[in-house]
Image (cartoon, rainbow, N blue to C red; front, side):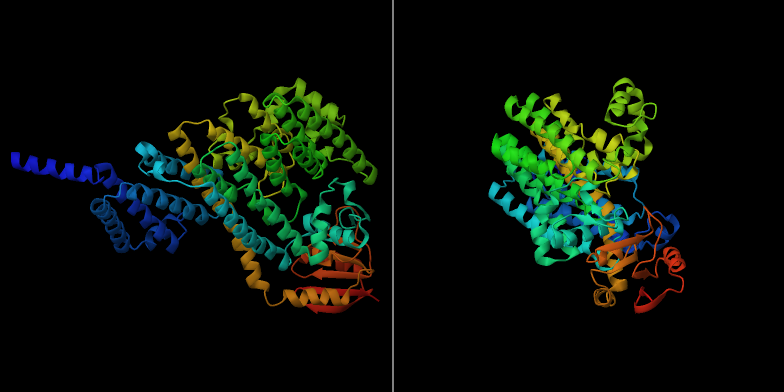
Length: 601
């Protein structure tokens, strides 16, 4: 008996010196079990149909993989004395499994993602305790961080430019909100003015809807490429450039190379950025990069670049003044820079007044105050009415901000960063979160708090910047947990949100790859710039070269007869409406696949 006890003691001591403790053995088989799940999901991802999923399991291969990998992990840990092998394998497989689960579920579900995050958090906390991953031994230089930033920038720009352009190439972009800008840029190239007819069914300046002089920065490139696809690629390029101010901010704050690298990865996969590029083209998507560069120059105390970036920020849109006002207050309070803060604040206020008057003079509706109509006191419109309702009825504001339909927005915005933006040494830094209230949470217009659209980009920059500040002040273990979890959650949520869009766009390409070029050729051959044209909303973006262009469904006036009607036979309802207006006054002069061109007799 004594001999057996002595033998067991020697075995456990031997295992301990080879880093193969009892908990590591358990972790090895948990890893192998998770990999078995992952491989089964790849074979049959319909896990939410219990009977179909269970009946498809090959239990022999499942248990073979589980036992073999578990034993292999233990063996190599024992023989090679690799302390970090099992923890690293566990965290990799756990991330892989969460990502596969996220992409397998065909419903966008924030509650489901929270469940996956809880499992990953347990794994990460175990791996970080006692530095099982040996993170302390990893060294990453700033040079390597910059190289990786360049690689991430180039790869994401090229890949997502291609993926997001497929929607246009296969005739699925619509008038709102892409046909507006394709026609506007062509008119800018010809006349120098941002004119459209499709936006309000009358020729007018787009600046009568939103004042966005920044569009002119992209005009030289458009003059070279002269294609709507350029706009999609340029937009992706601008969003991806934001990885460089992330690198610069982390370096300026003297964060380690490891932390800098992780924030670069977080930026590349943060779900509120590239995800929105799948929806058309908008000036708002330039906000992230501009705001991050502005914050970097503020940290560097470079006043001239700060003023330049402030003006560039304001030129994005009239409501961009909100971001600059808040950043100016942050500079005044947190950075104690009274002069530059006051200049930024004055610029924002003056610019907003000017921009508001420009919109009012060029358009018939003025700035879109109707989106805040829930806050009009006694049906009186205007900013003063909104201000009164917020100031004197805080309960009403909170009731409107925190609703069930806005919960996913809060989760997608903050969970990928593990709520680190709130972990500030100086509570006053949270001032930077204020724009989320008027831009997103106050609104009842659903697109304002939907991360598939363009209204998250300014806030995203501020949230990521605050996350960097929050991480800087955290203790080592908490910092490691937060950073690892942020990477895992960003990848998981990004996959959950983006994979259906990629799949959809690739299916478009597969369906129409042999016909789209001939459709484009027919449109350009049959229709000229001086013609007046009415087209289905999926065709309108491709008729960007037409000066007098109208769209169906019609939003601002009834359909009228024009020189040409261009029908999309995939859209039966609106095609029928167009035919009723055409009557027998038109003859078909071109037909290619699902597009028909009818000319007035």
